[in-house]
Each structure stands twice: as C-alpha cells, then as structure tokens.
Amino acid sequence: MSFRRITDPARLHALIDAMLLIETDADLTDLLGLIVTAASQLVGARYGALGVVGGDRASLSRFVTYGVDEGVSSLIGATPHGHGVLGETIIGFPVPDAKTPAESLARAERFMKAWAGDDLIVP
Image 1 (cartoon, rainbow, N blue to C red):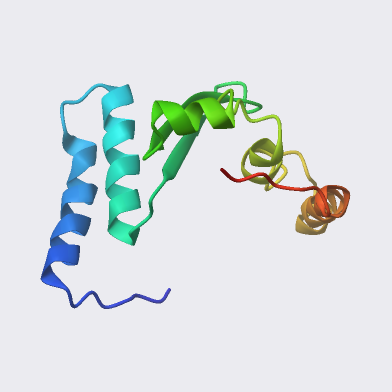
Image 2: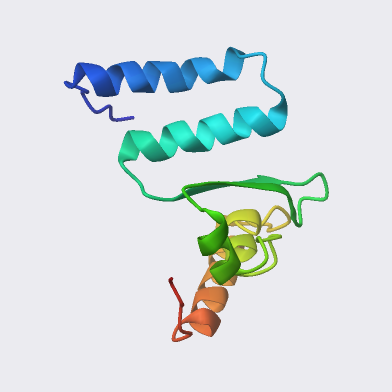
C-alpha cells in the first residue's frame, strides 16, 4: 500500500476532521451530507455525490450531493436509483455471484462495449 505525504497543514487538518465525522452524533442523512461535503472540498471538487447501496444490493437507498443547487438539480432530473451507469459500475462490480474474477471482468467488458459511444450530457 502506498501513502501520500500531506505537507499542507490546512489540508491535513481537513482530512483529520473528515475522518472524525464518523464519530459525530449526527443522524445518518446529515452525516452522509457532511462526508460528501468534506470529501468534495478536500479534493477541490465543485460537485460531489455519495450513493448508498440498499439492502437489496440492487439499487440505491440514498443519494447525497454536494454543490448541486435546485437549478442544476432541475437540469439533471431525477436522482439516480442505481439502474444506469452508476448501478452497473458501482453496484454491479465486482459481480457478487461471479464464480471467478475473469467472469466479473467479462461482464464489465460487455457493459463498457455496449455503453461506449453514448453521449453524456453535462450541464
């Protein structure tokens, strides 16, 4: 495992604060919001999102964003439920019922070949 040295004291402090969020008394929805906000700010991202895989292991039970105001949200439309690209890449891999890593990889390759070439619309 490789580690990256953090030399900026403010960035190190932000990282420690983010790690300590787990021990807060916040309810789950607020905690997830704090985590996605801290992670986005730590890497300098304008937008961030965190999807929580549901108990059915086939869809998202929650989807929390950072930096997405009502205007941007209306342009995007409905929040993901885990049945598109997100579901295939995050929920579907590795394939839990694949008998071998090669079987999981083959499914990923079939998905990417089928998806390649589709336009992505980014506001």
